[in-house]
Length: 237
Image (cartoon, rainbow, N blue to C red; front, side, top):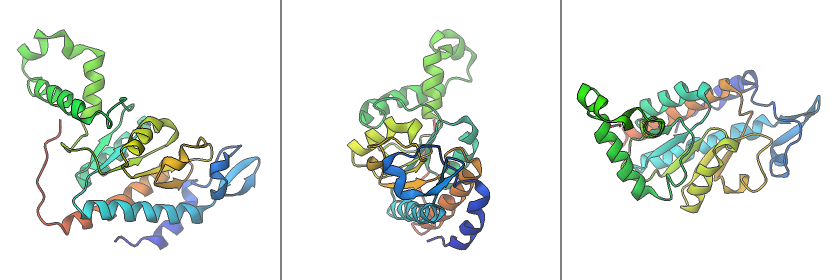
């Protein structure tokens, strides 16, 4: 397992990961160090511990040939999440979660296959001009949702960036008993926090922490996958 405690300890303060919101919810108070200028200060020791647990989770799942799916709706983080998924050969969704994406997986697989087959002909002038559906907002939305999916099976774990904005993904994963690791800020709604298997308390507006977390997950997953031997490549949409 990737041991980076010293590196993370050195870099965490510079990420502004400790800056929370003005009024932390009751579920978050165990992660709060105190207040400064009426702003909640997140305990970085808790952030470190929870980040380590999240890495252990992802490493154990991928070493057992499981599959991860990262969920993000912040456009600023799109490139970061896509790079992590590509380097580790895992899935990602950089778009608003579609209701039923996990709980109605069988149907979503059929829809994804339809869009993949349709996209295979998108370079053909006849194919792209013959159907107005190709230019419809619904097609573009579904294309964005499916472009990062690397597995034909339901993911074994969700990595959620910003739990507040991706509550539907968390609710569905919890319903299916899929383990979840998610970044949670001090304004995490009461009740939502309880559904997350491994919450990571952090300022969810900190792009520097997202970079750091990406590197931790990547350096954990890649060695665990190498231990499996040669992998079978799955075609993206």
